[in-house]
Image (cartoon, rainbow, N blue to C red; front, top):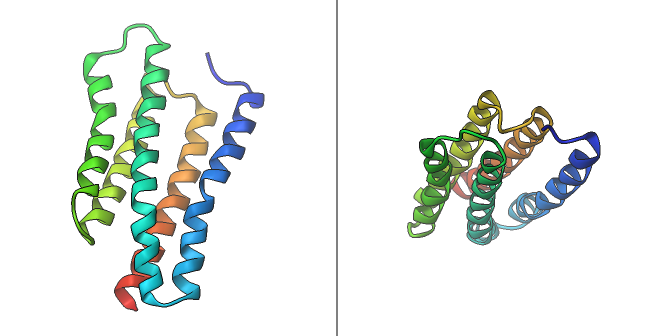
Length: 148
């Protein structure tokens, strides 16, 4: 069961709206001082952790809609959220690095899910774009903090 074009459109719109805090963070980081950039990372970190957890929930929902899902597939879908949770318990720069690792791990699970048949192509293409933009924004803000 693959999503129709009509179901991808709202997902794309909502995905774009979810990018607003990241784009705003880049603007805030570069329009102000390096202290503003550090503040942007502080307020984006919990949001990114929530997004990673949300992605894991989407993965579980997609898996549960298919027959024959393996326990390890479901277990691996939880790992990025656990990494993100651990990241929130650390200080920068580890927090940002671990959150990026969690985001990439969640994306790799989606790539794996596409090969296993529980992630449709349209969804996967959307995830790639959103992951690239989020990762790029977080790296840009972190770069501003590091380089001053």
